[in-house]
Picture (tube, rainbow, N blue to C red):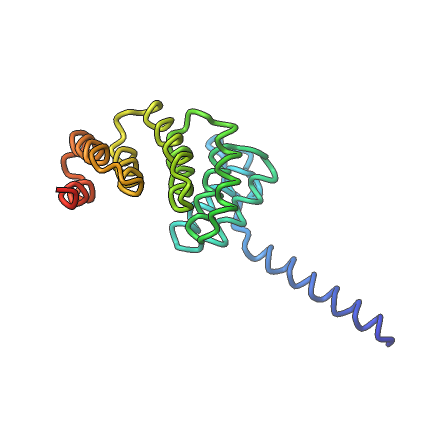
Length: 190
């Protein structure tokens, strides 16, 4: 055998092994409620469900890969893009996460959670004006979310707007009197 033939044989064996590994991760198809047809493990919905399971198990990279595959099959679904951004943010890849969050926001401008997530990245980067814009947008969508008020209070503390921050924490506590973190932050401010 020539060196080229040996390399080709090795490459073929490697790819065959990778195909085998992928096949081993496939579960039995899930039956439909009608009992007739079944959904493929490669359907975007099934991939998202598997990604959620991997996320819950703490396998963030595997969850991201499944979401990426789902996104390739059903491109630009706001929920999938949001989840991809969230996982990347959890992995400390804020710039990449921000890109996915922005794509998700293009598809669903009325999603308060996307605005909150974008604001958290901007806050971490010290881009307070951008963070404030997204927190305000989130409150415009749902002004009864205690977490948004809490996040806004934290941003205002960073901005040294302590009186405004106190008001945000107080509002968070009016909505959720058991919000321990908001109470603690309010007490710190006196």
